[in-house]
Amino acid sequence: MQEDRPPSGAARRQTAFRIILILGVVSLLGDIVSNGARSVTGPYLLTLGGSAAIVGLVAGIGEFTGYGLRALTGLYSDQTRHYWRTIYIGYGLLIAIPFLAVAATWEAAAVLIITERVGKAIRAPARDTIISLASFRVGRGWGVGVHKALDQVGAIIGPLVLSAAVLWGAGYEAGFALLTLPIALLFVFLFIGKHTAPIPGVFERNEMERNIDPRRFVPFATFLFLSMAGFASFPLISYHIKVQGLLTDPQIPLVYALAMTVSTAIALLIGWTYDRVGTRALLFIPCVNLAIPFLAFSGSVPLVIAGTAIWGVGIGLHETVMRAALADRTTTDVRGQAFGLIYAVYGAGWFLGSTVMGILYEVSVTHIIGFVAIAEVLAVVAYLWMRRGLGGRKEMRT
Image (cartoon, rainbow, N blue to C red; front, side, top):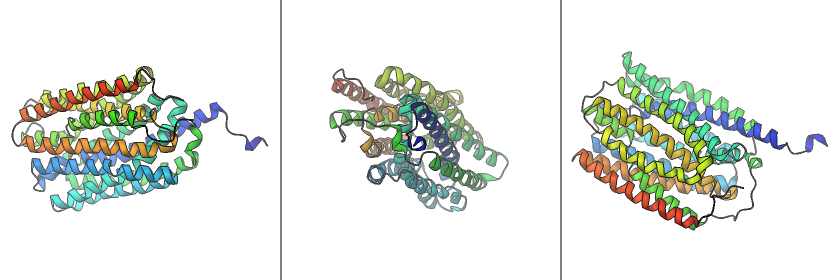
């Protein structure tokens, strides 16, 4: 019967791009919430009595939790194929952010910040698996880049909401409370997405070996760990801006919004570039990371703003290239697990870097620069190991 025939290639491409756009809007709304809060985490913890070491530790634990737990949630999504259910639960934990409005101590705020990161850990492998499956139909790098660009639009809007709340005298608390609205709208788009592609696996089929090849995975994971260890966290950058009196409280989220604007453009550019040069695009990451501390931790306002903009370049590079490269290295049957594992490595590197840099900040910025230089040089070595391990083979693109 006509209605029982599988959809044509063109129809699948249209549906695939539609689901990328829908999940992009979901991520946009989610990032209004998470990045709105993230843009003021450093200054807010400072007002509650936190130190630079505390800010670095909370940021590190949050990122480690948000990435480390993905090894388990990715495995769960592969075994159950309950991608949408997992995404629903993960986004539900965004409700922790509005509760920051009533946090009375830095310890309470830290718990809420980490809770939101747990939600990120739950939803990300399932969401990224769906994006990777759909992007197979439209170009791996381009599909991931479009999603990441939409995601970053939310990361621009969120800080503007917080900045406006502080500028108008309502304070951080009112800004956090306003973030309840995008959470409600987010679930409307999730409902639409689930009914647009209830079984995402139809977008991509392949005949690759159904396991994670250590020869391809370990060098790639080592590169990501080292490059993320040398990637400064924005909470520590914003803490530096605050304690040095370089910008006012309302201006700090605006600088973050600038970084996210840069990141949006970079996500599209690097996604397009990846489809043409493959994993060679990864080499941009350590180069960008190395430039950040020289500028972002300086005492000059123009240099700090430039450093934060370059930090935004790093954000756009990291997640776009990493997600596309990983999808090209893994079979669909273990992709959720692969995303979970690589995110755990990614988060471990960020945890190490954030914690060490927070401690080193109390000593001197020069020590931070030295630490970043060592981490990124080692990352380049790991990249060469990864390229040598390919032995001239192309990435898996079926």
